[in-house]
Length: 311
Image (spheres, rainbow, N blue to C red):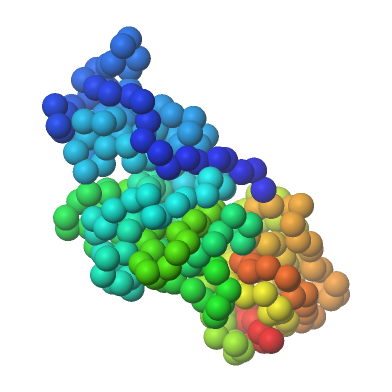
């Protein structure tokens, strides 16, 4: 996984308590031209501490001052964040009153499933993660999802949301304002594709490999269209399943961990002859996991069904 480090500290760039811009030429400071964020009309400047291609709102951007603006095109590993160093300036629907928080502005250039969770190394607490549609600081930004601790007492946080092209605000908020520790380390994993998120312990789901575009490093023909399923798992959970497809569809599976395009973290399944059912079994992991099952076809695309079990 190609990781980008993101640091949530105020930058040193300064450009009126809220400077309004119309174009990039309105965002020049010390000979450096920044970017006018057209949705907010605030200036931002390139900042490597905000990741590959990241920008940071300047200090005269009102409520957005100092926040990173990150485009969701590569995986991002954030430095540990100490929520105790921030104030309580907003409240997510699943958070408690008085919880301290910070935010990151996210920009998606495509429709995709977004997977955000905490790395166990460097995390001492559980946070509430909320995703709002709209720029950070917008009073009318609508909350799309709010999630907390999916794996019991484990200090682990996770949020999954389907997003369309546009701007979003990720709010990171203390789960327990009275806790002594407030350090959490997050990773943001854009999938760059549509998918069905599967959370039931077992059952059957259906799909069609004709509906979505190809995925980089998939196990079938590189240009083959595909369908995908994301299983969010806690430690010790494993997934097995069977794909059934009518002729002439010959299913081929790409099994990936965390990122559907990463060929170094998973494997291929194409063992059954012709249109025979294809089975898979993904062993349990010792850490939380996002298991991707990408279904393509060695022949013509078409509909299929998948029976599965999580145990």
